[in-house]
Image 1 (cartoon, rainbow, N blue to C red):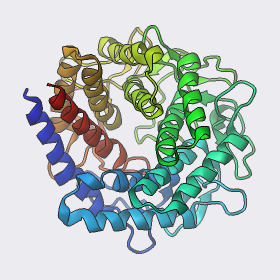
Image 2: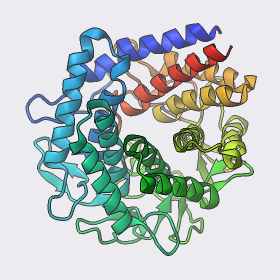
Image 3: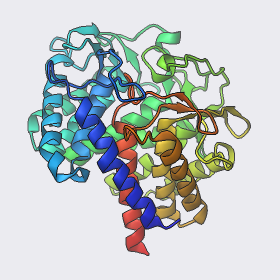
Image 4: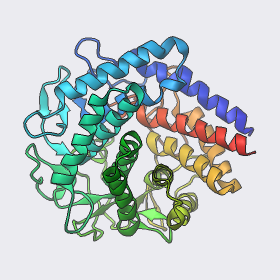
Amino acid sequence: MDLKIVRDEMEKALVEGIIPFWLKRSVDSQYGGYLTCFDGEGKSTGDMNKYIVTQSRMLWGFSYLYPFCLREHKAAMEQAAEQGAQFIIAHFWDDKNGGFVWKTDRSGKVLDSGKVVYGESFALYALSEYYRFSGDAKFLGYAERTFELLQLYCADTLCGGYYENLETDWSLSAGGRFAGDRKSLDIHMHLMEAFTTLYAASGREIHKRKLRELVDILARFMMNTALGYGYNQFDRAFNRIPAINIHRTWNDERETAEVIGTPTDSTSYGHNVELSWLMKLAMDTLQDEEAAYTAVMQHLLDHSLAYGYDYEYGGIYRDGIADQEVLVKDKEWWQNFEALVGYSNGYLCFGEKRYLDALEKTWTFVKEKFINPQTGESRQLLRRNGEPVVSSMGNPWKGIYHTGRALAETIRRLDSISVKR
């Protein structure tokens, strides 16, 4: 397949599908913020509660994707971002304890005042990006205050890394399902992502230092760098432990509600390919030559192709056991959209045709099976062959972030590949 055709197809899917889908439906004109729950036809499901993670992802999307939108959408994109940023500060920021609460109802009344580091990281990420978009230093100030609270209450100064689930006053949550005794690759990867954008926005030395520290923690404690996969969950000292469904996580709230088992060496193929390109972005932002991590980034991609890729139908599976068997062969939207960025980044960095082949085959599966041509957005979950399992366009966790970002980031990399050629 011609790469220019792939690039143009992606641009059309983003500009004429994903951006208009969310711009038309998500802005809550009554209360502010964003509505995110839509069925397979793009109609509201009636679930109006708002999570900091998804409100932040929507704000990030309208800010970051502004350069890609059609001219006639630019004023609406700007307004959508501005009102979302104001809603997050007005209703999610905890004036007493600092930080962002986890969940509110549609009007902004607090339903869950917990401090979830996953949510804090996305608020920090979105507000940093909104500052880069708008130039309004007020929002960078909130991002920097959030960063400081993470260092004060969530940084584990004994073992390294960050605690993840905390209560209103920043006390640790209970253990087990409430995860006060656990650390995970997922949260640390997204903290790295957030600190990358924060450092790009602020240029401050402390943000740079903590970003580099996160890259090192991920590689040192949370990955098999030689074989190229990440482990899922750890105790506080980074000993691997069986993965469980944790309160206030996507795994715990999936509509299919399954439990996939508890091996200590389970891995997510989607996280691995996402981690590869996010590490590269972090190192580029740090202006580090990344010599120590170049091989790691490639190993993450190679492992996904060796053990988690479906060469018959295209796309990547959900979960597996390290370098052995695939546990779940269903295909979820976010893993496969992130794979587009991972494989295009792999080809840009390493020039090896297997990444280009995987990109093209994954895109064919995504555009033919995941993207609903009637709505322009992606279905949530498919069987291995593309048969829909969950056809919804949006839910409390699914917004513009993975689909919009993946296409934008892949387009940027395809443009760079074209220039290099």
